[in-house]
Length: 137
Image (cartoon, rainbow, N blue to C red; front, side, top):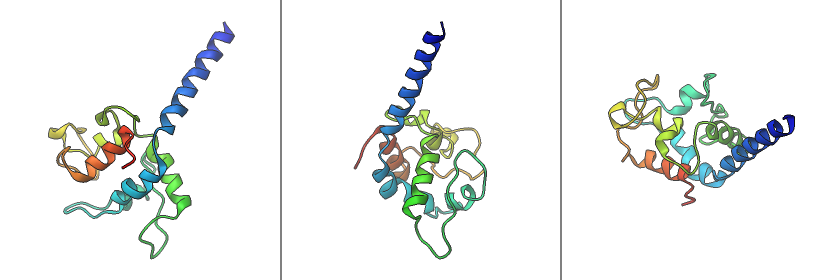
């Protein structure tokens, strides 16, 4: 019985690692991460709230005077963000995409930072969705 439990646990762990590995770090760093620094009309930048909070979506604080994260910080951000997505699947199954999306566009009921994306057609939302689906473009 113990052997079966250990086997099931190993399969679950391997599935999680395999899913996480479908998220491409280089695409994240080049295309997704800059979105978190972008100022959107009527909203704070994602980094403004998520570098100072203890939420699941935790971004590293930018070094003073910097306009981008260091490679080490980007890796920590990637690890944090990866916990909020379901790679290779429906983007709306990923909290990273659903939470800041307007409710009438399929998003969550509430987001402290407001609705960063009013529509699933928003180019930045589409960029993140493509990354979640596994696109490297």
